[in-house]
Length: 327
Image 1: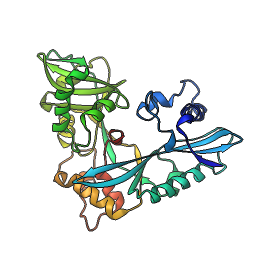
Image 2 (image 1 turned 180 degrees about the horizontal axis):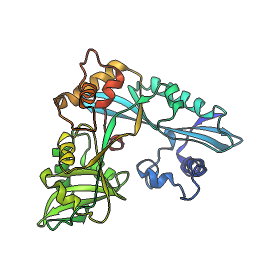
Image 3 (image 1 turned 135 degrees about the vertical axis):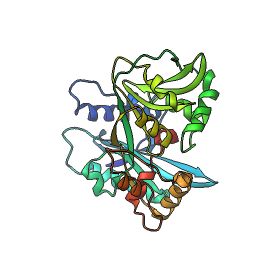
Image 4 (image 1 turned 180 degrees about the vertical axis):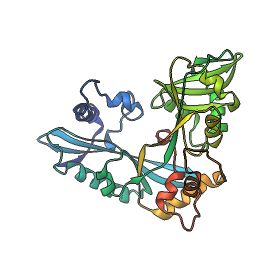
């Protein structure tokens, strides 16, 4: 039987998700609350956004469908984010997940959802109408010389105005508020730091293990010095595909580049979807030269398609919104 989750079932839903994902891991203990604290952490309750498949009082499968909206020029663009797609071991292959995703589809149509985002690349999602989403960049740098000019300072809330100003100058979307900026830096985006140069704030970064998940600086010509803060190991830096200044700075420093695709997108209302992307990225449509290993002509033609001829897959290249910032 399919039911909607209740607020008082938060612990049961988390336990069901943890158990399902734990079955696929042999060593590390899985915790959805640690992986996605913005949706399952302390003080957050998204239980009513979940569809549950229950049998004899036991949760056998779970799908979360968090609904939100992007506001642009006074107009609202509703969207959904599908996550925590999980089925208990021993009950897979019985169509439980398909049944839950059907309920997600019904809800999205009823709520006027324009598009839905799902993290994953499995073939079964393609059968439910999801297409491959945007391509992002990951640059990998070899160990470099230690920096004498820059230092890192653990982020403190009192420095929020300065850090947020760097976000506003560097991010191509301008979606986050000060509140969501601080929350996402401290959760899904890893551990945040301020970048200091001679005692003055020169930017910020967020680090998770050996990956810089977000970086904004006053002067990107000093990127090499910041990378020098991590001299003992290889470090990677994530860039969205529209942050041209950061991409070009990474190329200048000789970063080895990889393409990264993290989401799938299902579009329910193409006209509104294309309208939203056109507005969001209007100022970003300009020629850009990307060196190898890319076939830059193919990439640019996908990144800057003619509006009348563009397909949804083409426009997906525009769509590298930081979705965690929207919740």
